[in-house]
Structure formats: C-alpha cells, structure tokens
Image (cartoon, rainbow, N blue to C red; front, side):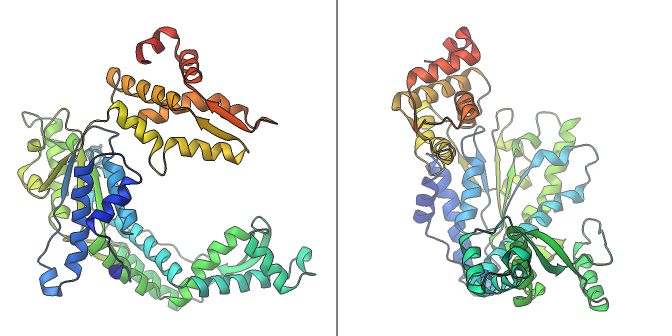
Amino acid sequence: MALSLRVPSPREIVAALDRYIVGQEAAKKTVAVALRNRWRRLQLPPEEAREIYPSNILMIGPTGVGKTEIARRVAQIVQAPFVKVEATRFTEVGYVGRDVESIIRDLADVSLHLVRNLQKSRHRERVKEEVMRRLVRALSRETPFQSLTESELREKLARGDLEDVLVEVEVAGEPPFQMFAPPGMEEFQQTLMENLRHLFPQMRERRKIPVRQARELLEDEVLEGLVRPETLREEARALAENMGIVFLDEIDKIARRGEVVGADVSREGVQRDLLPIVEGTTVRTRIGPINTDHILFIAAGAFEQSRPSDLIPELQGRLPLRVELAPLGEEDLYRILTEPRNALVRQYQALFRVEGVDLTFTEGALRRIAAYAHEANRHHENIGARRLHTVMGWIMEDLLYDLPKPGTLEIRIDEAFVEKRLRALMGPEEAERYIL
C-alpha cells in the first residue's frame, strides 16, 4: 500500500516545491535527493535495504526563510507522515528523558491517520455508496423527507443540499470501560482493549447530528468493516518506519555555549536523550513497536548564538548533510507575495471573493509592502517571510472589517493606499523610518 507509492524524481520534487517556496535551491535539492533515496532503498532486496540508512539533514538559517515549509511540503508531496517538534520543549521543568520518545508516538498517530485516509481513498466508491445508502435510509424516516423518493434524496445529498440537516443515525457507542496507559504502554493498552471488546457486546447508540458529521462517523465505521484494524496498524507502522519524517526545530537552542554549566547541562542532556532515536532504537506506540533506524530526521536552527560544532559530536555525526538557507532580501519578499500557489495575495483575493468583491493590487503596492517588510526585518527582529503576514494584516484589516459593501464589485490597492494605511497605523515618524 503506502510503501508502493511513487516518489517523484528529485527534479520533480524540486519543481513541486518551487510552486510554494521561493528560492533556497540548495535546501530543496538536498531534501529531494534524501526523499528519492528512501524510495530507492525500498526497491532493493530486504537484506540490502536494511543496511542503507538515511542521511539526516541539518538546515542552518534565520527564522522565516522556509526551513519548516520545505520539510512539510516535501512530506505532502510523497504522502509521508510528518511531525514537527521544537527541541526546546524538552528543556522545560519536569522533563524526563523518556519523553523524547513521544516524538515517535506522535509520528505513529500521524501515520495511522494518513493510512486511514489512504484506505478511504482506495475504497472510496464502496465507502461512499454504503454511507449514501445509510444516510438515505435514515433521512427517509425524518418527517420533512418522507415524501421524497430514494433518488431524490440521493440527488440532494450528492449536491450537498442537506449537509446541515439533523439526521438520526446508529453508530458505535463508547466502550463500557476506559483505560489510560502511561507513556510506553500504548501497545499493551491497544491489545488489551481489543481483547476486552471480544468479551463485551459492542454498544450501539442513536444520535441526532448534522448530515456532514454523520457522514464522517459512518465513513470510519464502514471502513473498519472493510479493513481490519490490525491491517491498518501494520501499514501505519511500515509507513512510519520507512517514510516517516521528523523535523527537529530550534536544535541550535540546545547546543552547548562555552563552559558546560547550568542550563548548558540541561541542553546537553536533551541532545543525549534525542541521540538514541536519531541513531536508531525501538519505541512502543499504540500501533505497535516503531523502529527508528530508517526515519528521516531533519534538524534546523538559526545558529545565531551558537554553531553546529557546539552540538555534541555524536549528534553532529548523525546529521551529516548540512545546508544553509539564505536570508530573504526585498526581491525575495516581493516574489513570496505573488508567486507561490498559496501566496498571501491569492489568499486575500480568495477571502474577498467570498463576499463578491474582486481584489487587485498594483505592482507599486506590492513593491512597497515588500520594501517595508524588508526594512522592518532589518531594524527589528528578523522574522523573514512572516513579516509579510503582519504587514498585510495591518493593511487589509479595515477593508475586511467593512465588508460586504453593497454595490462594491472591485477594490484596487495601490501604492498610495498602502503608504496611507501604514502611516495611519504607525504614525508618520515610525512609518517614515521603514517605508522606502
């Protein structure tokens, strides 16, 4: 199933990333090759495949330049389970070493969810037809729809006309017992719960809920009848072990700084606790034991106050591929506003379109927004492309507040409007300082 999914060539992966991320070609290329190598490994005989380990990656660059987005998008491209975690979360008070294994337990949960969706897609027609049949039967018992024929109800459901209508459906109820397992005991809990279910008759309950919610519950129930839960867990384990991606953010903040005293002891302790899962170990999860040997780890950090060499040598050795991401210039910010498929300009245009308004920007307006964001990053904390969200939010807030405006079919944002909005919000002196 999941392991037979096609992984595009590195060039195809980079081309797909280019649709969403501006620049950073070196990082895209490194990640693309790493992903394709995982697919190549799976084509080998098992005895050879076991000996080929992923080359984990260390991304170095300031915040907001695309580190997380590259990792997240590439996981979506190959339908791989993806987990992002800040390394600093393990330095909090009350931290105990075994908690780092929660990273893999989270990955297991993501993998199971992904496998469920893939199975729904595989059995889409069977699931869709059975859910439709159950919804039609349930709706035909409701007074407002008793006069409608089956074909009329099907047509209304297919068009989405009844999504908010309340319907009474029978679904699996909560088990008559609950069990909460401590970390590391999830697999035992899952097995015990399944054995107990065989001893107790399955509880059923009738619930009156909107059609859209009923559809989701029924889809899961129908899928469970088509695919055994154990099969789902086996596929999820295989997917997590062979295609899973863990993104360790803020890795620079747990690096040693000078003398190893005080907080640095805690930082080094976190590195040593992370080391086993990066090197390869087995973690018990609710879908079974997950071996981390072939999970791809991508670590990232700005390294403004420290250097990669400040990480403990063992962890450095497990992050052999290093790539630097460049800070974003004014031209980069302009391109980010306009080029990606999910560009901010497109996002705002979509929001206005819901209200029947056609939103347009002049090039001068977009250039001014990019220039301001760039200068703000230079004089304040550099938050990269995230600064564009702040600036656009300032500019568009009043327009969004006043929508809809009867009779207004088009709004055009020009350079003068942008400058006026920023001056009004910040005051002339502050705006003059940052608007070029």
